[in-house]
Image 1 (cartoon, helix red, strand yellow):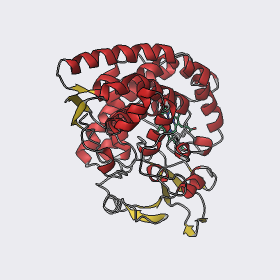
Image 2 (cartoon, rainbow, N blue to C red):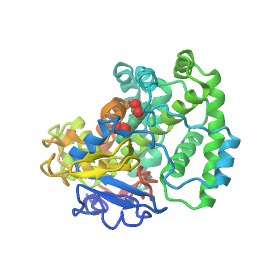
Image 3 (cartoon, rainbow, N blue to C red):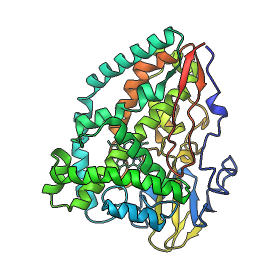
Image 4 (cartoon, rainbow, N blue to C red):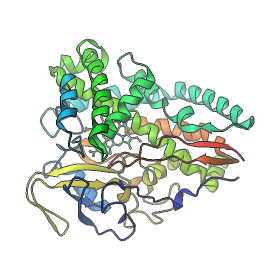
Length: 403
Ligand code: HEM
């Protein structure tokens, strides 16, 4: 088969090129931790080693999560006005909540995403993926190119989420546009004109969420009944709608692209000698959709041998931690089941560890099991393109055709 560009030859640790000093230095030579000044002159302590990343993530007293959703490009007054016009607020709820309310809010969300409830969606999802795969295979058979992002990965996670959590009645496309706008507004290097446009998009949907938060059932009602303010209910729904579907869409796309360049793994899946779950874990390790996650030092402290001043923004480089030779034998190679493969930090660690990990893994397992065969004998017409972003990969398309 003629797979497209060899994924292993792409820059494997795509940190944002628009942040001067980061992109160029993204290679084997990084120190365990290093201060990097970003595109607006703010210094961050970038932590690259698995043990140190873990230390940061599992100690929320010293390394607080308060800055998790801060805009990396400060919002200009005009964009803030647009957001304020939509009564946009992001109080501490989940990922950015180091306070006393976090365990309860997290518990309510975790109930909605309980492993039993996730497992109950598997059969339905398998049926849907089979239908999609059959339609895509027919297109490929007819000699036409197919976009596996648009045709498979983009909406599946949102459709599953909507079966688990009551969500506002909005078209899939509107939710996707809003979520991608939010990831760009808060995590990308931007100019002010773009910030204004994104603020309008994010603000519009925030209004929809605010109305739903006041009247919606399910999770929204449970948060209201537990006494949380409307701002908290909106904030929790906001994060869930972004984190709970866009991340997984991105991962499915990146993983399928990776598998297109891994014929031996596909052959192993076909023969039953490679386990689907091992492929998913190795995919999370090598192609995590979230490459970094931020914390802020609450006090003067030490990280390894390095003094860290209170207030320092700490960037935990999750993608790099997954390739730490201290943890995994063949860090750059896609070897499902290799020792250390599952020790990646793609879902974070500690009290804020991803609450949707089980759901994301189930979705990825179904897609790997049902859709990998589509990649046999294809050429990559258009590999995923990932824009500059501190944290999210955000691939836009993945087009293949039969060779
Ligand atoms: C492959 C897909 C996914 C990846 C790679 C991912 C990754 C992450 C990461 C890195 C964090 C921060 C962890 C930390 O601070 O230590 C996080 C938090 C979170 N994720 Fe995910 N996630 C994914 C899918 C999902 C899904 C499907 C949902 C829900 C439907 C979800 C809901 C959440 C929530 C609610 C939090 C905040 C947890 C807290 O602060 O207590 N994620 N995720």
